[in-house]
Image (cartoon, rainbow, N blue to C red; front, top):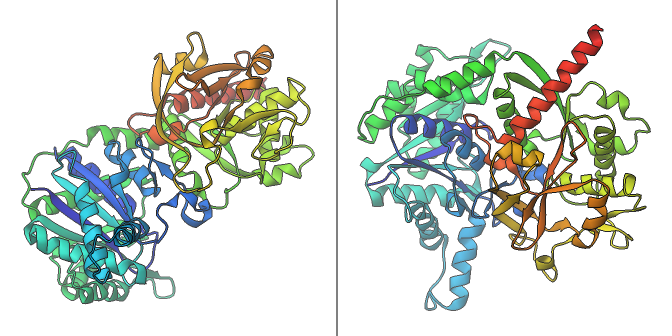
Length: 542
């Protein structure tokens, strides 16, 4: 019988439910438990694919092409398992499915209601996770906070679900804030008490409470929460802020969370092995050098917009004993700068990430030109690759006004154009080229040296591609197409062989990087940035 762990949040959002779920998954996996994690999001959007990143952060893409919440990226990085469409459920999905069946007449004229129809749909989608593969434990994180109107159907669904699968097979973990009042220098438990009270009004009694705080809370405070919230003393878990999110599993292990979960779910107790994880965290704490990477983006005011890229850069740093310092550069700001040398001179590598729309494009192109001409390591991702092609076409091939047809429909040189399969597609949601596709790698290229493989599978999220009609002119000028999707003859990767490190991918390698297994592209990029740092040090000393 699969066991289920439901994680809810209270008081405020962004408390770290996703990291808590991910960390618990890592702890259980280290003890031989087969685990999967699911995100239940109450928003009405079918998925976050059409959302502005400022609304919901990064859109994470799974192997099977689902556009999902960024927390799934954390899940994959922590438990090192590829998740699927089944692992992200939204209110939009549930309502869409029920309304579609109602329109077909499947309910035989019955009145459709939130209870039982929407709640049944949510419960069915929770069960889907174990349909194709068996798991000992499924962790379900419910987005938002207790008391949100849109979240009520999900809370009612998990209340019913527990009764159906047996109370002995489910536990509820509530993540809540224990704030520290600066004026009196004391922690306050009332927000936690009221949050749990609201949860109990809905019919859910948490077995475990995880108390988020700035600094560790005392045993007396835990006992008070235990008394007023009716949970065992051992089940009040303190989780103070830590320097790195990868330290959270170790902090929760120290609090005994995994032991308590195994006990409450009556799962076999096996000795855990977090030695590899501990080694990784220690390595992260003791870097030999620090490299500064500029991310030239258009959503830089919200760092969660590029969370997988940031984490992948850190992973690349791990494999090179390097700490990563991110310099956020707004692409629009660069557009208005006549000379970007003062902004770029102190960095060791440039990343131009993905995105949509014309805003900030000329700033990205300007940064790419600087990296190409100044031998600065450059990594382009998705739109970043398309901008690199545009820059090369304009400034090396002398294709005046070269552009993407996405930004200039009348350009004489549409070096980036809409994919043939996308022509005629009008709906925006879930219609891009999504998920994992094979990339065949040209031997003798930097890309082949990085992967040491002839073909790889990488994840995509785009509508536009390199225009094959203009490829020969780009190639003649020195641009190398080192990765190709052969079935449709699409360019996947470009590189400049005479540059110290200049490579860009149409796909998103950041979605497959793990802290214990850094993606080879990011590892190679950081190695090049570290070399740039060494060259600057030598130059400074001389």
